[in-house]
Image 1 (spheres, rainbow, N blue to C red):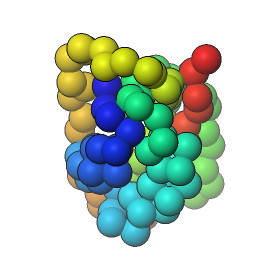
Image 2 (image 1 turned 180 degrees about the vertical axis):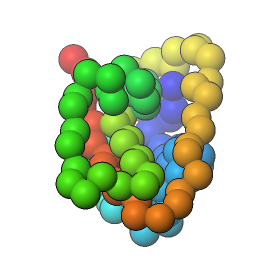
Image 3 (image 1 turned 180 degrees about the horizontal axis):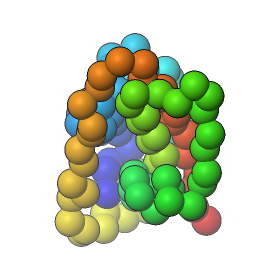
Image 4 (image 1 turned 60 degrees about the horizontal axis):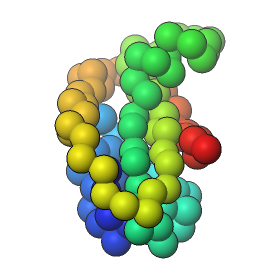
Length: 106
């Protein structure tokens, strides 16, 4: 749960831990920040395996490294105490494909 005004800094850190380059993270933030920063709080969750296990993706030729970042979020009026999510990334080697996206949860 992140205050709207703290969302940019939170995303910079989270996306770095998920393995995105600065340029990739900037593109993600440019898209999502206007939807998030005006909310009092945002409940943010990166849907790591929950997303990759259910959303098939085929790339030909297959990449050496695949990064898939999908953020589910919900605006909140009040702070909600929840544990921090553990975020990790694979080591980037060779041909790397990056997919990012997200959705608002109602």
